[in-house]
Structures are given as structure tokens and as C-alpha cells.
Image 1 (spheres, one colour):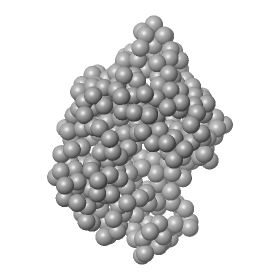
Image 2 (cartoon, rainbow, N blue to C red; image 1 turned 90 degrees about the vertical axis):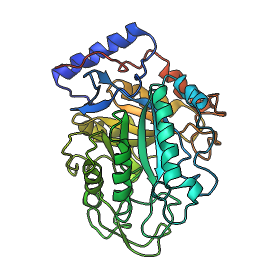
Image 3 (tube, rainbow, N blue to C red; image 1 turned 60 degrees about the vertical axis):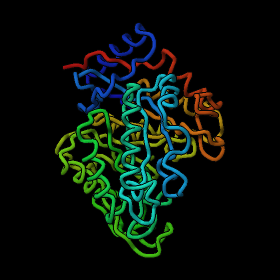
Image 4 (cartoon, rainbow, N blue to C red; image 1 turned 60 degrees about the horizontal axis):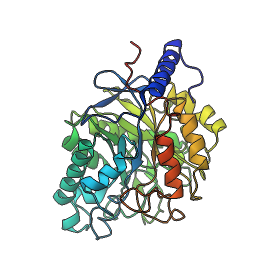
Length: 373
């Protein structure tokens, strides 16, 4: 991706590669160590180069609103230890706006204070295994419409309040990252705009559709950044591009302003996406990766195999781009890429490819070598 780096960055990459090859298994993060952006790099609180390689833990975005719990599957320490055994150093946790805020008819047992406490406890358990946590606004909806699916963008009605509350809850936790909205998918057919990227940044009126019977207004990424920063939270925030976070072509030109200087680009990569070849990653993602950290918030393939993700991870490993496999759930891989067949960590064929790659010496940037000054 980052094919044209300044000389200092090239030295850092080579140093990291040598340190990894000499050091054996990838280091995991210490308990709640802190992570931040420094130019295009992720760094620890002590200024050491980091890269995230993790998993998604789906369930907390849908179980609550469907009325059958908060988690889909176990959320105890043993289930988290099984994740850590794969040499991951981060877990992305999808959230539901209605469940967090306790609105729009979600059962009280699975929403509001109960949901918030369960998420906070889960974050703490993840930290106890030395894992960074990405909190993602996954399902949201305007007005009184229940958040029961993915819409084209976060809503202005509730999403700013959601992020104000989440950021307030976790603003003292330096090992938490905020992923502002899962998969923006604005186009001229969805929104009353001729410029989807301006809508992405600033918000706009959304045409009826996606299960919403009336026009509603989206919250732009700038509004969501502002909601986080107004709480005093200074953690890293991620902003996913368009086309289900697979398109970063307009990201730099419409980059939200962040007074904390802690903005990363979120990219989702699957074999069925439009940008699924190295030529596209080089042309579209590399310019962004030269300026800010790029975190592949979701990575997967729908053929129950691992050839595609192997190709992407090999490419990302050479450029310092982070990634998180979708998903640490026991689904049929044909209905959604699933890494495991049970919560003790037995991999699917797809999951085995991901697990084995994380344990391989080709991961040359999992280094804690001090970054160039």
C-alpha cells in the first residue's frame, strides 16, 4: 500500500521486520497500555510502533434488539483466552445504538444500564488478556425505527448522543478505539445529494428506504468526531469510507477535522467487494495510508477458504496496515465468514488460514521497536 515512503519510514519498516524475525511469536499488548496515531503509524503510550491484528466478536449488535440476550455465545474469561491464543492483540466489538441508549422498545434486561455494564465488563475482561478493544457503532436507526439492521449511515437523531455516552464511559481507557460507523454506503440513490462524500462528512437528508418509511437526516463523520471530542475523550477514532467501508477514494479530500489529531481510516475488505485486488489497494488505499493509520476493521471471504485473506494479509504485512478477521462466531461460513466452529477456538478452514498466518514469521510489523524520532 505505502509504496512511496520517506526514507525514515523505510528504515523503520526494515527495523521492525528484523526485530520480528528475531523475536519469535508476536507480542500482545500489555493490560490497558494505550494506543495512538503518530502520522501514519500506530504507537504505544511509550512511543513504540504497533500494528493491530485481531478479530471481530459479533453478537452485541443484534442479540439485544432481537430480545434474546446481550452476547451471542460466551463472554467469559475462558472464551477470551481462546481468542488470545491465536496471537491476536485486539478485538472489535460491534454495538447497537438502541441497546446502548435504552430506546425504541429494546427489553430493559438487554438495554440501557444493563447493556452498558455488560459491555464495560467485557472490555475489562479483554484488557485483562492484554487486548486492545475497538468499539463500533454497527446498527443504528432514526426516530422510533428500531435499530435492527445496517442502514446507509449513522442517524442524526441518536448517533451523536450514542457517541457522547460511549466516549464519556471509556474516555479514561487509553486501550479503547472508537469506530464511528460500521459501513457507510451513501450514493445518489440513497441521499438527497449529488456528492456522497460531502454527505459522509457533513450529513444530509436520506431518501426513504432501507426499512425507513420517511426521509431522515444522517449524522456526518464530522458530527460524530465532535461528539466524541466534546466529552474530553482523546482516543483514536476510526472513520470508514463509502461502499460498505471498502472505498477510500474520497477519504483524504473529505477528512473530518479532529482537534486531537487521532483519526484513522477504517477499511473493510472481502473477496466480493469492488476493491478486492492489490491494484485497487495500491491505487486507492496507499495515499490514505501514507498520511494516517489504516485499520482493516473487517477482513474475510465467503468461500469457506483462506486464499483471499492470505493475499491481503501478506500485502498488508509489508505496509503496516492493521486488520481484524470477521468473525469470532460459530456461524456457517456460507452465511457469513466465521473463524471458529466452537468457542474454545477450533478454527474453520477459513479461520485456520487466519490463525496460521498470525503465527507465521511473515508478520513483520508486529514490533515494539521504538519508532523513528
